[in-house]
Length: 292
Length: 306
Image 1 (tube, rainbow over the protein chains, first blue to last red):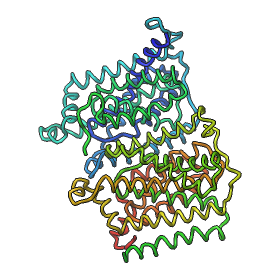
Image 2: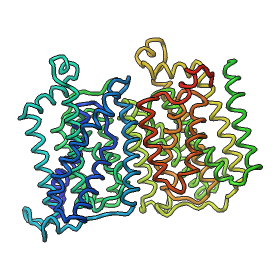
Image 3: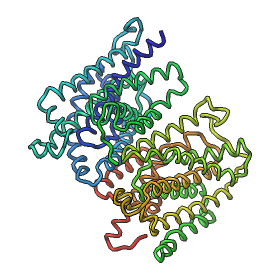
Image 4: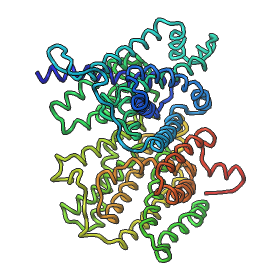
């Protein structure tokens, strides 16, 4: 009974964590940079959903579409502003880490100035009333719909990457940036789109954060980035589909910890991250990416 | 050798003298003490990041471990503070030894993993189930050994020794071999540098520095919570201060602390968000326009700074 519940809830949360990690992984895969401000874009997504509901009573499912368009558009100028100078530097990966950390601090500060430091939450009934039964187990409707929306977003990214021309070019850049450039692909344009998409996915994940994670505060970003990082490291860095596996493994193990060893559950992401980085730095589905 | 003497005369001696004498002229001793803590932490980051290129994003883990090692030695073993300080520093070094496998990771993965490690230590220390040993989330009170004069004095000594270590690293053969590892570890190994040993030694020194100052911090403030000594802002500030001034130099981290922590104390305490915004934008500006920090810029202008 408890086992089934933990497994199913883990799968629902796993889909959500997959969505949360997907954007970070896409940006890493295409540009080989670490967007440490990823969680802060999730935070901005959560606050967008909150204010859109507070001001015009917009349902979060529609807020998600709005956030998708807005963040994707925002991503294009941000890419041209921040990323090309980084890629010209000696060690882009390391520098990106520091640069986006600064960016994350600036976003967090601006959000705290604009929204105040208090916790914001959205009522779960916005995503349907009453529990929904899946295989004999009852789950809040908000969880179920967040899980379904996450699965839809992940599927859309799959279709984009594997069944569209731009997605095909994106995968070419992921495979080898230099060769993609040599074959005449507009690498910067493709990367800018991927960057925008990465932010948009973070934003959508953020919209559902108040339902899945309880509430939103301006300072939640760094923790979310770390959690997303765990998910994509489990899956494998630079492989967007591995993220789904990573998300589900992370979600299920989190639910197991919370069900059976709840007092130590908060240790899980950190220990899991360190263990996986040490044992299999390339992730479960990854090829070898580590140098030296 | 000569440069080492010069660096000591220009940076170490005046700074240590200022730290030791300012309390007689300026009444806010806590502020001076915090300056010393950040001067030491920024130099500790300098030792590992500046000289080997590994960014210890979870550097605060050693600081907090030092603080808790010290406090638990006082509470459970009833040791004298100076002996307990040794135990706190030993705990930090032990943690660093446990984490040496992280060096298999490169760049950002090392940074993230060390960050996660610091969080893990914090989660263990603050877990309510360990109440009997660590006092869990309820914090530590060391009023029985409270001694601001002596602990301040010990902090000044640690500052002097830490500055001495960076002067040594900047001017010695060992420091040169560390920098060669940072720039190209394969070539360094071929030139006869024992990469693993040198890197591990720098890592342990860096952890020792943070552990010592963490223990003194616990002694000086004597009442604190786990989130006080494991606060991510210790790592973040130390890294930003060191980067701002310029790493792998003696004076860079010092300039960073005096300038940025000075600004922090003017505007940061009343309006922390605005300070956070400023240093966030400052980090971005540094990476994009001045990746080496202030000291290399001064050197390019022909000003010879240590």
